[in-house]
Length: 142
View 1 (tube, rainbow, N blue to C red):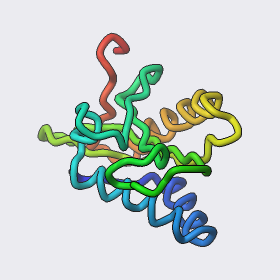
View 2: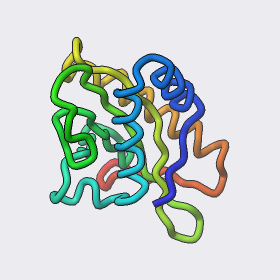
View 3: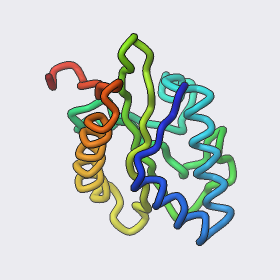
C-alpha cells in the first residue's frame, strides 16, 4: 500500500530518531508493516493496528506495545501510538496517510481525544494540499 506522511509527523519521526534508536527502529517496523500489509493490519489476523472508532474519518492507530509480529520485543514503556488515516486517490486506490505519533504512557486512553482531533485536522489539511486524495469518511459519519 502506498503510505504518505504528513510533514508534522515527519518532524516527530526525525525527533524520535535523534532520541532513541531502538524505539525509532520499532516505529519504523510498524510503518513498514503498514506499507506491506495495508488494511491487512487490522483484519483480525494481526495486532499492530486498531481502528479509532470515535473518529469521523477512517483512522487507525499503529501500536508499539503490546508486542506484535512487527515489534516482538516491545514489552514496556514507552507506549507509542501512530495515527494514520485512509484516503482514496482519484481512480479508486487507497492511500494511507500517517498523521500523528506520540507516547500515551502517562495519559493512557486520555491521550486519544486531543490526538484524534489533531489527526483529523491534519488529514483535512493534507487532502486540501493533495487534490488527488479524498479522506475516507466512515459510514454513518457523512
